[in-house]
Amino acid sequence: MVATNRKRLVEMPVHGEVAAPSVPGAIYDVGHDGVARVLPSVGGISLNVRVGDGAFAFVGDHIEPGVSTRHPDDKVNIGYCVYAGVGNRATILSGEAKGERGTVTGKHGGIEHVMIDFTPEIMERMALGDKIAIRSVGLGLELEDAGDVRVFNCDPDLLEKLVVKRGSKFEVPVARFVPAAIMGSGLGRATVARGDYDIQCFDPVMVKEYGLDELRYGDIVAIVDADHSYGRIYRTGAVSIGVVAHGSSDIAGHGPGVTSLLTSPSGALVPELDAGANLASLLGLR
Image (cartoon, rainbow, N blue to C red; front, side):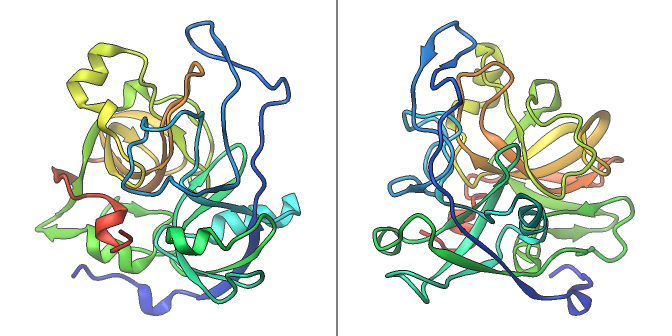
């Protein structure tokens, strides 16, 4: 186990609710190929889409696995999205599934959603507007003696499952490597404490070389030459670790979205390929 400051972290509930599914204002989305499509998109309860499933396996655009949540007040929702961490436990507070529990699996910027995994049996009993409490813990989480390694959006229990210290380096299992050069929507934000940014998968050469068509919801990935310390930038030698939070898209500049978990400008994070590096297995969700 790595040493962290987890004993000093504040734990508190933050409240949201199941968000309704939505479509673009123009109804159609025009893809990078010039084709206009009307597809399922963000929000709602994705009854048959969960972490561990393929990010390209479903007909949709930016599909969010499991249950999409937010607070109905946009100002309050900012705090909801920042305080929630991947791996945090969630409890349903209302409706037929009241009392059932799930796990936060990612955050989606722009729409500002927090995605939560529940079993199919629980999701069948849920409804839009059901109230949910996330037990927030992880904001301010740090690794001890970590140099320039920073942690974001991560429950301390998940961090301990992910990271092994080897001398001055920190090894992390990842399902895929992703070159920073193909990262798209979400670049330029001044913080990675909420939201995500997208892996563009429109170049067949890159897709084949890095196996990007095999990405799954919940995959832990290493973005090479990317520094997330104070926003998302390109930096040679840097490494950032994230989790695939939403599915593929045909829209230019978009694709499977990655929520940041760890970053090191100096490359102190050492990603190791591991096919089991997915939240479904790491957290025992499936």
